[in-house]
Length: 132
Image 1 (cartoon, rainbow, N blue to C red):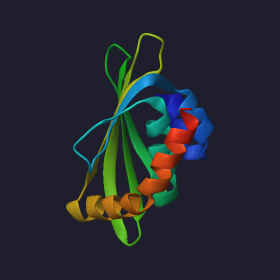
Image 2: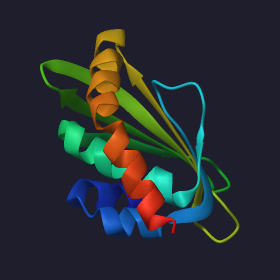
Image 3: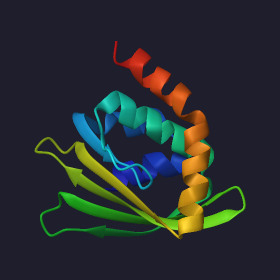
Image 4: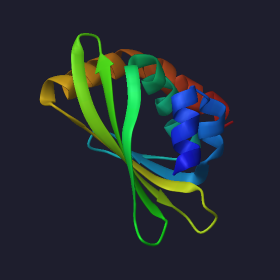
């Protein structure tokens, strides 16, 4: 998913949002319940882009049908290094309809959860304002 990768690496969150289907479902590495919808997914991704430091994709894997992708990354949250993977599925229109993120180690996931938790009220407000 070169377009998503390039938009994330460039910090172009408007371009990232344009790649999301309206009914996209985001599955967080630190919260059990998935987040349905473009507005909340885009707001979460904007928040994560502010929390991750030294973010870089290292590998890109694609399924045979071209609709499933995995982007392996490394980043830092505060003093915690983490590695992870964005699992992406594309709908019939080529838009992202599923985005699942996994991270490791546990200490990195905990640092991510704390940093995002501190921002989540503003993330929720942003998503509500954009979906009106």
